[in-house]
Length: 198
Image 1 (tube, one colour):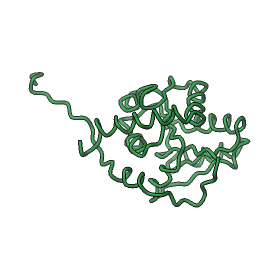
Image 2: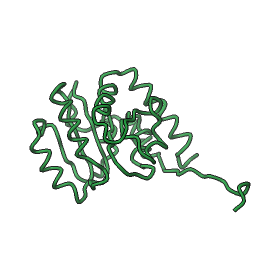
Image 3: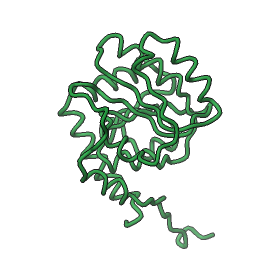
Image 4: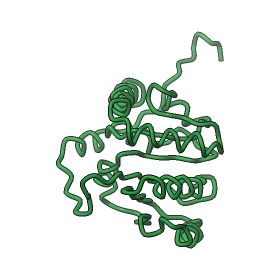
């Protein structure tokens, strides 16, 4: 096909559900003042590399305290991940919630959305997270890098660099101004480039 006849149409998703929830008051009963809430939503399969999330959370929770990890979703790796999480010192601060009809409300409650995948397309969950106004820290892989521009719309670390990714978690959790800047940039970016409306 001749180049002048090609038009690149970026993937678009309906972000109205995230936008509508963002305007609502969160009614979850388990929100504790002063506690940092870290979350993941997605399939629990090998390529999501969720054990890295557990390792990083365990390290930071032991150092900082007052934080909880919520994992929404299901899949073939869930049982093994739950068993592994139970061996960690921070086990009582980790919750596996399965599939949830109210996932948007849970997403809204997060102070940080995390992703440690080794392989992705262009993740819909990240688009919804950006539209919701929740900051993102993830590994820098193809697909994710279409949405998260390091130091602009979120924070990225090289694949399997848990130490750097942990530092990014800390930046987002404990530097409110930086977190706010990333969130504003991310919302603008996803609306301009990936909304179904656009």
